[in-house]
Amino acid sequence: MPETAFHSTITLLQALQLMGALPSVFFIFLIGLLACRGQRQAWVPMLYFCSLACSFILPLVVIYPPLDQNLWIKATLTLGESMLVAVSFLLIMQFLLGMPVPLPYWLVLAIPLIGGSPFLLSSMLSPMECLADEFCKDAADYKSLYNIFSASFVFLLLVYYSSQRSVAPSTMQQQKHQYWLIMSLILLNLCLLVVDLLFLAQKLSFAQTEIIITTFKLTFIYLVMTSLFRVFYPGIADEVVRLSAKKQHDPDADKPVVERITQLLEQDRIYREMRLNRAAFADKVGVSEHQLSRIVNHYFGKSVIELINDHRIEDAKRRLRDEPDTQVTVIGFEAGFNSIASFNRVFKDKVGVSPTQWREGKVS
View 1: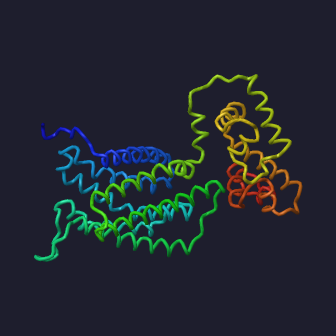
View 2: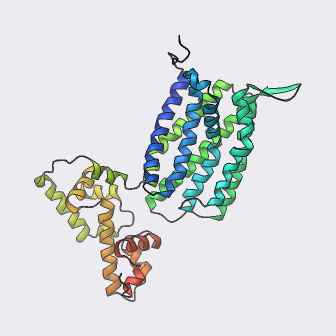
């Protein structure tokens, strides 16, 4: 068989690693598009999935000998894999801060770039690492030992910084997904830490360690897929509706639904419910979420959330004008917003000034 040919068969472990590499690359591509569209918060998750992809791809290079023999490729993948814990810290901090991570936090990347590079490079070049003539250990042991110390240090940083800050204001739905992502990231890294400890204690073989770690990472990807979309692209469902091919609308079938939507918003004023989202709205209308999005987009020219917020803002504007003695915060909450921050943000986006400025007549 030629030296450059692929191996004809792959193991179960390699199949699992391939199953993890493909969605990781997909997320890199998708989040990269968001980053190119100016969403600065997309850079950290893109870096995280680059590191995750490296951890899946690195053991797969043996399938294609020319890649396996290329030290530069293996060095890049090894370094990318070593950054996983540090980038997890950045991603968790971004969720807590609700904004792009400030520059000082990025110093955490010095841990894998400086502290771990010698051990990781030695594990790539030689299966054994000797600290003295009579004391040689498998390089994989040093790699696991480095993972344990680096993960412990990073988690101490995480405990310190998270104790100083609370989760940034966001919608209830986004908070739910953010907490789920934070807990998933922490649990994943803790599980990987425990596996490394068991490997060093010789309770697990190298093969067992690899398959357990791969399974944990693979489970993480498929469990948090939906939450990642909801946090970094909350309007993705409506965007899909907008960008999908034009569908034939049946005016006779859609008319009762449009009337029901109008009644719920203008007469029943359901937009005042703080927990009203697309799913709850669809349930009240009696249609699926997809059908609701399609009809609202076609007949109202906007997304479901935009339609709800438009009614909330109009209600708030009327009360700000007619009820000068009512506090702005009270009006915001009673209009359906679950925080004064989101009320101010949406109001300023749609009106051009804050609620207080609008009440004072400072309309832009």
